[in-house]
Amino acid sequence: MRKPASVYFFKRKPIVLKDRYESWRGVANLSGFTSHERLRVEWMGLYYTVAKGDVTLTAKHFSISRKTFYKWFKRFKDSKDFDAYYTSYA
View 1: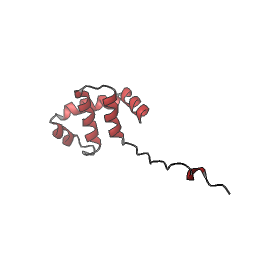
View 2: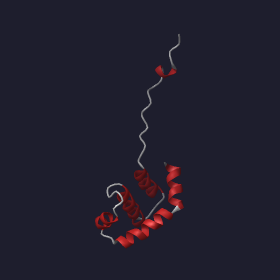
View 3: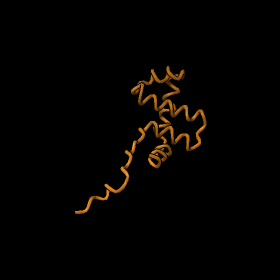
View 4: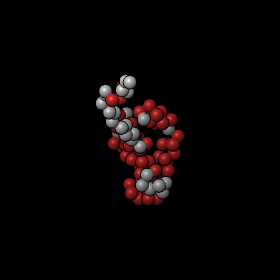
């Protein structure tokens, strides 16, 4: 009886996938975003993770107005380019 091939080879390391927001940071860095653009990506990451959808908390953390956050949030949500980058690098 033959042994399975997995006995003769090295064990595979588990693949650890980054969460969506870590991937956004990576895409922003690889795409050559400016520091202001990367900061806006950080706004969105904090909004979805730590603030759990609380605009007021996110705006206070970054010392911006809620109106400014909503303006960039709308642009971020409407952005097809960033979603395309995310799906290609994820």
